[in-house]
Image (cartoon, rainbow, N blue to C red):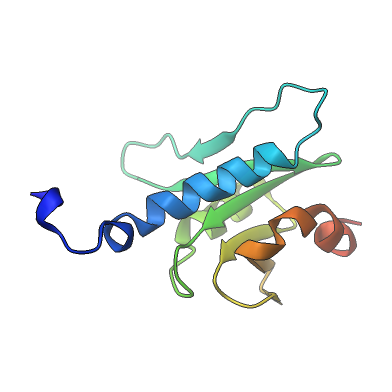
Length: 123
């Protein structure tokens, strides 16, 4: 039973992190447009790949994977980038700001800076 667990935040940290990022995306969106959140799920029956969010910056479509901790695999993000030929993917997590193999890692507190941070990678 979930109520008997000692730390509910730790049990649901992934879902809470995704919810936080979604709310941040909506908060920083254009006030005069009705923004929506999008995700990607691979449609093949033998695959269960999914990316938490798909955002647009200019004319670029960028996959975003949210990780509650500092570690975690990015298999679905990399699969999306390969299939859709994306220049850039974003991981939002507790990791410090970094760029490796086409993936820009952004800490939670820098979500509002995504458009500025991605400019040089998308030009």
